[in-house]
Length: 287
Image (cartoon, rainbow, N blue to C red):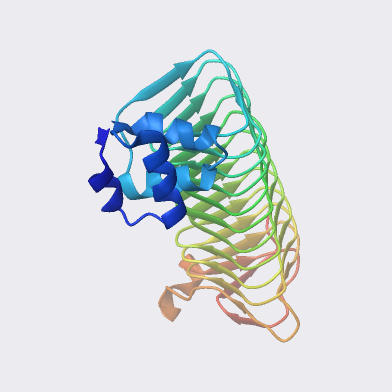
């Protein structure tokens, strides 16, 4: 893709950015070369803006290892070893790494993000495709992805939004709201905000939610289940420990089930009957 002066002007750049372009690429240049030169001159935000305006390319950058202060690539990035970026890592396509991915700032990909050796992102993370981590993952801000698959624990310093299902084989900690199509956590689950799944919610350990908990289907918890707000499930509720809503809030099961079917499809099972159980069929102690 050739960048001419008229093409760049059509994207409505800021005055300072357009002047930079005229000084460095007045006679036109390659798309990726412009991105590289912007990053080299410390204009990472301008490079990200340009990628947003122009869109991804079908190029693939293949490396054994990647270590730099920042990178903005229009296509996909494939690294056999590790990735170590001091600030921003941004790709128009996928980011795939056979080792550990470390970034000091945000990580944004127009497709999948795959880190076979684990992930440590110092800022927010956004992947249009699936986030896959072969080990533990730490995200220093908001996490948004199409799907989430983490083989270890996942710690998120902001909200978590998954358009599809999310599977975490260790503990999951979210400092904010957590939303997913379906959520399965093999360890403990802690969310400081509200927790919502359009389908089912399974947690093998304790489940603690700072605000409301909403599940479109059922909820199954292998430990204590507690929320600071209401607990609402479209079908059944089950916990090996107690089920406890916040002060003044209720526990609701069977919200998507006819009342006549509660006994079979909206059972509530726990160590003891939840206080303020307002809907659903109490069936006694969970096995």
